[in-house]
Length: 380
Figure (cartoon, rainbow, N blue to C red):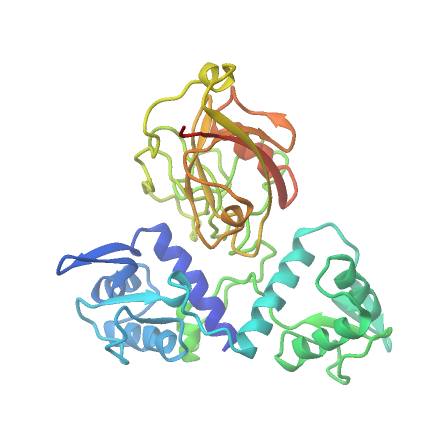
């Protein structure tokens, strides 16, 4: 089940990226964030994710059987290669949060935290004369869980780790012990960051993508020698290093750059894909207007903690940049971010006189928690 969830989420983000998922109308009714079954089959074949239409149908049926997608009106229990609308349950909030999904989601978040922060928990360690890579000491892992606010007391941490082990997310390095708060070594069995191939859902004899520390769910930093780089974008520029990662975040220019941050899922450059190209601003606003005493703008400070999917907002424009879109279920929305807000500062640095590239670099070189000052228009 966990592998199906990871594979489905990676596919969902790719389909959003290429605008296969979008709002569609039928009989005067709008169906948000859905895809056409026949178009998806065509897309899977074009991208070599399936060998033929029959195989593609089986792959998508696997997602439907596991509750990852559903027909928009829940009228079809079988996936049909036809002009029918289907939707990912994560896009309409109907994904069933049963015990397994809750443990899986929490395990993924903990894994991302471990991989995204500087810590010495996961190291090459030795137990009974055998060395194991990326191994955790149980008691240190629980110390870290308490420090990160994942649990409050040690018994709660031990109970959480037992559940992670029961669901196959972690294991004892030699698979000899259940989880015990002590000096035994444990590893994550599941690499959430490995790029899954759809054919794996059918247990076909397909080569696995190599393991990677780059997350398909999280924005990662570029190499420091790439001075001109910014966030990963759907429409990569020549000076951008392409990695296997897909993620919603925050960037766009005031002309034809893409809206959501996410890198190309393939090492080949793709043509630009326009996302939210039309500005949401009702009228142009200058930096001078924002700073004019008595102007109808109110300043707010937002603290946004990125989750395993992203920060959930889009920035466009320059001098000043503005918020183009906000994911209603993302961390930015929870922090109070709204469209048409103007970005004043990022992590204490004034960005009123810069463009989106500078803003993106400031976020990229910081931590997952970002503090942003914004200004929004007040209607009297």
